[in-house]
Image 1: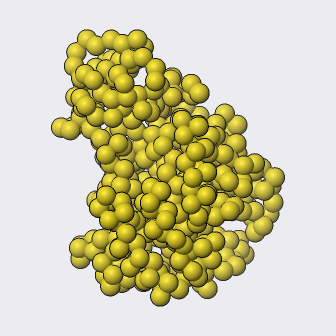
Image 2: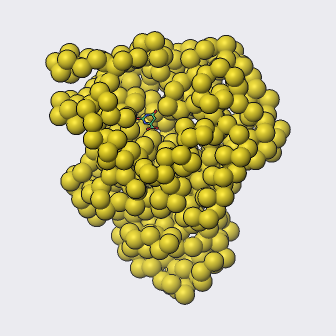
Image 3: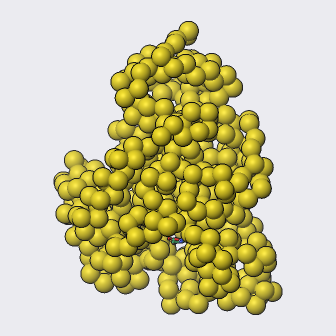
Length: 433
Ligand code: DOR
């Protein structure tokens, strides 16, 4: 633990909204809020906002098995640079996160990196094969709270029903906190063979498409299963206007559903595929301007609870292939705040709601993350400069991979500092460890 840190001159996001105050951090928590504070390190942050650190519900950190593309350490460093103090790591590693051994490995690697909290999610089914349920109780005992077969949806409705019932019975192992089943919504019999969104652009380009209905039908089915079981379900990377509308209706009906949208699904549309550049290949695929508008509306009215990154690093030799053959996925951790700040018509407070407070609640980590900036709270913080601009460069990122679709884009909003467990892990946009 480093010495005390003071942040001066910024607006802080406390329990009652934004106010100008200095913050003093000692021993991992916020010791003082008020005027004229100083510490062993004093960060002059005029024009900045001190907010709870961001929480990403959806990052592929690739370790174990995909270390050429990313490791827990490089991914956690990228996360810290993006203002994140907690990340939920997806289980489509090799081996899959479906056993205690892999959970422990990720927890140990995350503790060694000590850059942000990395919470391993567990697979819903063994090997993410969609057949046999993973030993969820065993994984919950190790601290796993979030289960998904991400990369694939659970195709069989009976299996999904069983998973929801099983998860619903496990919260006593988690101090009464709910266990979240998160779904990658894609009916494979509809999407199979498709490499981009099915619509006008796929017709023009002669590329096989994935219809919006492949996502919408699974959302519809899982809303029905949430009603049947009473268990919570979280919809990952919702990308279609129809999906947003169904989540809105389910919430209005009082069902226990939550949803996230990725930064790429509200900043890029399917016309980008006309470049044939595999950097734009992603699952679910980039959709249409109408879908983008619906996601933005969903974020503004609370239908979409969280912005997630779906950070999906791939090596340049993997992406150096035809659009059809390249793997889907794009980087997200180091550009998310700036993209949201540049492209959305939301205030900084609203952005912090969907990038920190809401995702912390969904992940069940809101005792340490997504907290107001106030005395006694844990010092997991980010210091944002919402007006400063910068230019995206994949090679300048901490990620081992460079597959950002925003190369060369000028964005507004810089993460100046990130404080994790009271330590300055990012100072002036540079990682300190
Ligand atoms: O584009 C994607 N990439 N979508 C997924 O669901 C998986 C991810 C990956 O692991 O690369």
